[in-house]
Image (cartoon, rainbow, N blue to C red; front, top):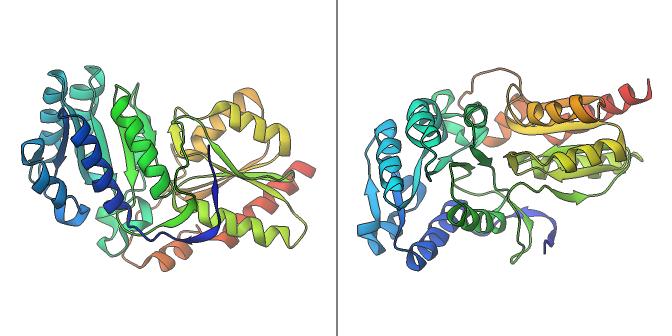
Length: 322
């Protein structure tokens, strides 16, 4: 059962606290659950886990590739390691170990990359992953997810623990916008339709969900009614939801806090071009590097705000008409 929060508002709990609390619950239930971290437990808020479960915690230091290799070995003997670092380091820096030691060996490692896209803010371009999901998306048998808020995070994290295989989750460390009511349950691989509409559909995830809902309200005031779909699983993408949105509206906009190359827009377009071609516009990072700034500045700088989404919707609708 999924219930909407009724309006977009800030979460009261930081995502990193919800991550730590939920992981502690999982570790209490199953001694095979491990936390592995790249010297970022303070930043990620997981020191309480280390204090409560010292024998289930490994601080790997700033050596992410080695951490993934060790996690693969632990997985091979029945452990369930959750390995965290900042998004660019757990994906770019450790890519070969993820591919060879984890995925190719068909092991059970859960990768967590924090500060996705512009949420890295003042850490700047070196720490701003616009390509993390694309890297992981290219690895066979990898499941990749982006929880929207605290409620979804709790549900997704439990599923990651219970389901065998390689997972990558990109995760906001600090505050985000609350979209769903407590108690809502989600299924990895199944999108959520947050708002109905017949003129176009915005398929979004993460930071862009709240902006898509704002865009929907702006457009409604102009007589344009759009669907908003939360595609929190990028791989495997929910093909059924994408095809249905195309049939219902005839125009699609994707919105992602990520490079549009090999990101959510690519995943959606790959479905549409084969099964239900319609006009598509892509909101996201247009093949650029990140930079230093606060969230509002960066969202404006890279065109992720509601007004950009609304303009893309109008463009997609015009293409449908012509």
